[in-house]
Image 1 (cartoon, rainbow, N blue to C red):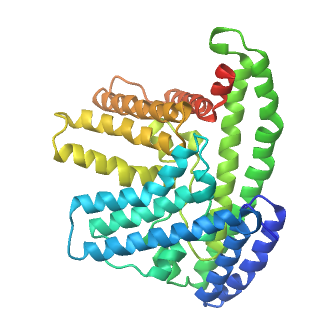
Image 2 (image 1 turned 30 degrees about the horizontal axis):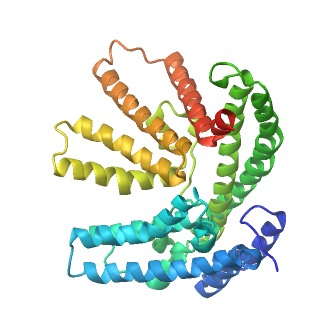
Image 3 (image 1 turned 180 degrees about the vertical axis):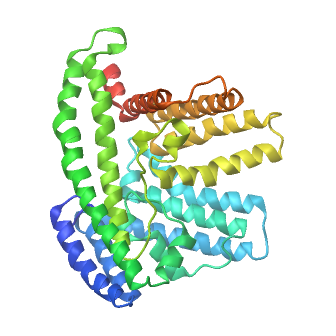
Length: 402
């Protein structure tokens, strides 16, 4: 029985082309068949979660029944009530399967193999944001077929990008004009071919060919202060490039496929290596995730601190929220010291960054701003980010403790 991980096998792209071809033809002639699109989506979900991964498919079905019932309950509850404890309990229950999988992955428990499946994080983000927007009154009604189409949208099923229900629904219920669709189709094809360059050439070179060699050299060079060596610096940069090109390539495939289907799924990367500081970096790197954390965790935590007057200073409240927000992001990646340290590194980095920007604004006349300072800020940011990715990689855990 055929079974593919999305965008990992050349045969997958051949099948994908055959499936998308009727959609392209219909869209060019001003038609959209949601029935056909749903059949294709179910087919590709079957390719991903069928065969050897049937247990993941079963877990996905149970998960979707559970989350849909939970969202349905809260939507009807919210029409006449707005008690905070019910909202918090609903969000907690919506996130519980993901939290259980993440925590049990660090134990000998077999829970991940029972209830976990590829993409559970990104599906949970979509469900939780729908519940939060329902609580805010932004969503007053939900089409449940569209909700399932939104959560299970196959191009972005395993690793995003993370879309928003209202934006997705608007695209899915409309048919772009022929010229607009031709532009979307052109962009989609461009993104897919760029994804091939990123994922199958550059990521392969850095991750499959080069990374094992520099990791072996770093392990061999152990013995100095904190086992720091030139090969370890090589690991830092090589892993950073592999991480970027692999994930950016996948995201380009997902966005490109979405565009071909007439859905403007948001981009995930926007030249992050040109960032002048940490805040700009997170506005360019894995943008759908960073914006999700900004809107649904950072802003809500900050609002709660301000409402309850937890801190006397607005600056202190913002700084604490930066650290908590990024620490939660670290925990989301996994319950290990290097993921949490990675989150804290960026949390405190954002605090320092914010402090510097405020100082710079007050002393604008005495602080130079020219091509050298801008170039230096880009170089400094890129190196600090690469160092954080070395932490994130978990290689230091192997280097120091194994």
